[in-house]
Image 1 (tube, rainbow, N blue to C red):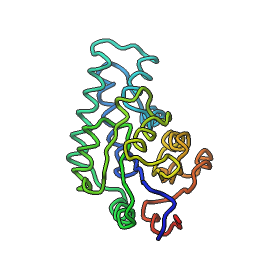
Image 2: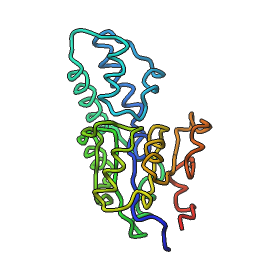
Image 3: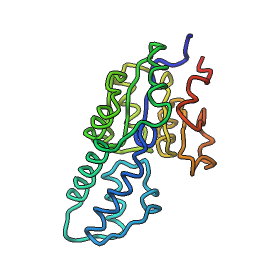
Length: 218
């Protein structure tokens, strides 16, 4: 098979692992310690954001006392690392999709808004380290998703033109980042958000990574 792509770029949270429940639990627990009672719906407002931007988002709403923004950030990341290490499971089709792209001889990278230690914890837990040529975190970019910086840096590091990259995402902000980088994008939304009309800008919309091999990516 001759593919139109030279590289595949995976998002992580909500795509390779169902980490959003972990994020919600960690955020509600830690923010509650400074008197900010977040609901699950509140947490979903910032899905796809880099976590320092999540902290800043809530700081602008309520400037708490007792802990610094950095302390809140680090406590949530600690909770997340523990949850991933103990509870993370691969999403349906994750391993099969990685094997599919590897069998085509494509470069495979992971580009996430999450901190690098969470990326490393995830690929180790799922035993998928060997699939990736490159792991990239947006934590040191000036802007997180929906800014395209993390995807553009990934393409540059892989020495692949952006228009020869295919991104796999689950969130609208991630999809927007991919399209802003001039990359094609497969979106696999959370079932509760599947009918969100904003996903119309995706090149493909799937119910599961299990559908990847059925696509005609030629």
